[in-house]
Length: 389
Image (cartoon, rainbow, N blue to C red; front, side):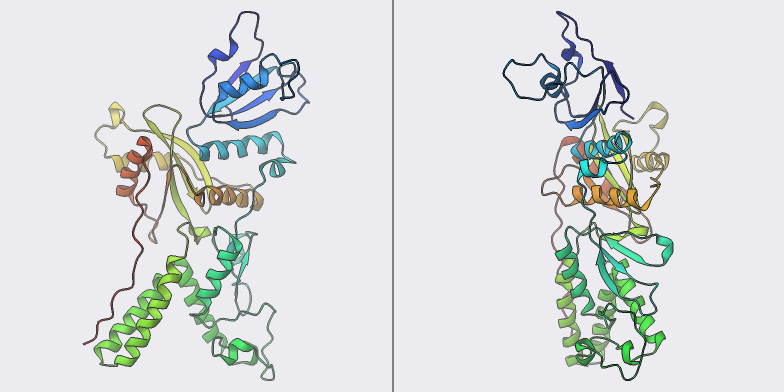
């Protein structure tokens, strides 16, 4: 997995460290005993870190020194912290299959779960990803549980599905709850609706989350315009107020939050190789890569457009296939950790509802990432003004 292998046997007068790059890398140190545990970590300067670990120790220093224990060195250069973190995860997973999770300290991201396997589906927040074949839907990753809970509670104010957690057995004698009294729930608990009516409302919630709120926004806008055209000004004003209430909720929905089983994205990162960038593909939250993408086309590909070259590179990079749900959640945790960093290098682009990536934006982003420029921040979207006849 690590590209370069060196034997550590510096002799007198031989400057072993001069041959080691002073660059970002993930490295592994092995001892002469194959049964001994390796030393694995990442560093921003490989030469400096190895000099610190393997140089002759100072007599009174307490600094960790492995000079007498290391027999070989393995390393791969990396172009970004994201690449280093993902490669370190892969190496630790192989080197320490029973304890890598404790070494990495990965926190599984909060997800919004739509319990579609339930007779009367509901929404909740979880950090456990289930199998997509179960019928349940998962949306995320969110940066924190409080943000996820606030978002889902605000969203449910626009719909009439239940918020109780128990399995329901509809009975006309059921007392109901405060949400049914406030007309904020269809009240399936006391047969306040039919199963088909409740299922239709759940489909509306699913459409909202899957389209990042666009389905409800379009519906309210269309209803408002129809009310305006029919001179129902009070109804139009009420719908406009509802749209204004929805807008800040959509704005607080983080960009990485997607329906997990349909999530498809491209991450662009700096590369350790000159005149290139590193591409990572994300499929259903699982990360694959890097694919090294040269900025200049090879001789046989000079007739291709930049978009076609990017698509060819992505097609050649097979999607990741996590062997278990745990591995899948770990990929999501790595993605979430990078996406929500205050200062992050690189850019990410998500596919739209037609599973299409914004290639023109990606071409410009590759140039920005290569030059080390930050991505432009789009202005916040504001609700369209109400138009009355």
